[in-house]
Amino acid sequence: MTDSAAPVVRRNDARHRYEILVAGDVAGFTAYRDHDGRRVFYHTVVEDAYAGQGLAGRLVTHALDEVRDNGGRIVSVCPYVKKFLTKHEAYASLADPVTPEILQWVRTLDGN
Image 1 (tube, rainbow, N blue to C red):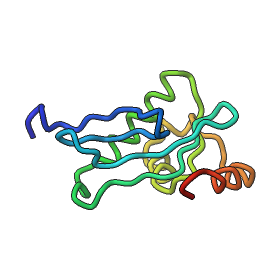
Image 2 (cartoon, rainbow, N blue to C red; image 1 turned 60 degrees about the vertical axis):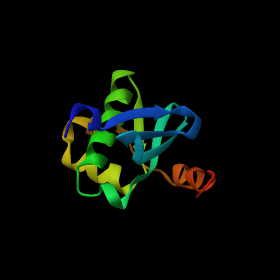
Image 3 (cartoon, rainbow, N blue to C red; image 1 turned 90 degrees about the vertical axis):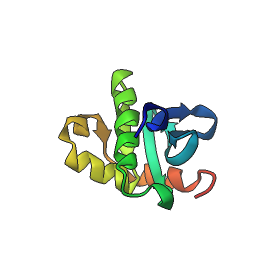
């Protein structure tokens, strides 16, 4: 993979998500909303054409690093992010539990 084709992660505040781009195309994203001072991750997708390349892991690593670097906390409603946290214990200290109130709130978000 050349440097120009290397995946790039960016935060897209207008769409409430982190996106991973490959050659300028959005290959996947992890959606979030901020709630009660925490970043709630509720959905992660990598397009089929980009599956199996480790992009979801790079994407979530970048997102969690940013939250940690800013002194933030997360809630992992998204099954992928939840599984990622069990495999990468260095990030576990960022996570607060998923509560019924958080689940109800996520259900009210656009697109859910």
